[in-house]
Amino acid sequence: MSRLTLTEIWIYPIKSLAGIRLQQAIVKQKGLTYDRRWMLVDEAGRFLTQREHPEMSQFQLAMDNVQLTILNRISGQSLILDLKGENYGESMPVIIWDDEVEAIEVDQEYSRWFSDQLKIKCKLVFFPETNARPVDPNYAIQNEHVSLADGYPFLIIGQSSLDDLNKRLKEPIPMNRFRPNFVFTGGMPYEEDRWKKFSIGKNRFVGVKPCGRCVLPNVNQQTGTKGLEPLATLATYRKTGSKIFFGQNLVAIDYDELQEGDEIALEV
Image (spheres, rainbow, N blue to C red):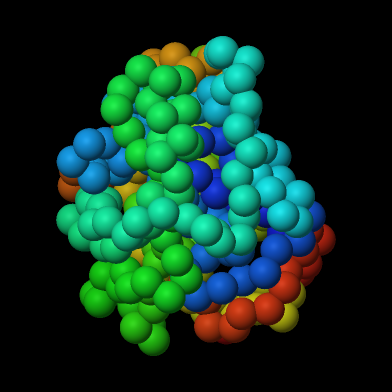
């Protein structure tokens, strides 16, 4: 059996904007540090994503220890955000899928900036670590909570799974279409579907549910255009009922650091 190795770590600090690749990260119950702790919402407080606004893919992010830099590739304008979440604004209810949670508007100036860039009225909100958002109890292991990710704190995908998909596509696509937190090499295509208990370095995880995909993987992250692939091809061999699956959702048992190159060990 080939060695399973963690080769990429990704976070998406502002939900549905571009991701940031890290060499190491701290695991927390709700997800990796800074992963999807911010989100854009419309005037009704409902979350915004690339599903309806593919131009959100054109906001590039960079991060150091104290701040997040957001660059709109279309306008060339940028914004700097304090990562510590201090001196933020008012608390407000926001809606993400079927969940209503409390979040904090970062600042009215930041909301205006995004409204101007996207040409829709919206607010930038922050989700504190202490605020509640339980994982679906049907899949929770220890009553876990999640950040502003769609439903689960972590997503893992094997490079061999993408390689197999790309063999079936007319034009290959990069992994960023699927927005994983963890990418690994070794093993067979789609074997992560069957993973239950395993460890990455010092951290134990549990695979709780294969990831049902929405239309977001059809958005080209480089251009912001939406097509029919890869979901059209995935539907021919990765569909169960009405859902198309690619990747595995996880919850964590341990909350320690992990880094690129860590070995993945499956519990037998």
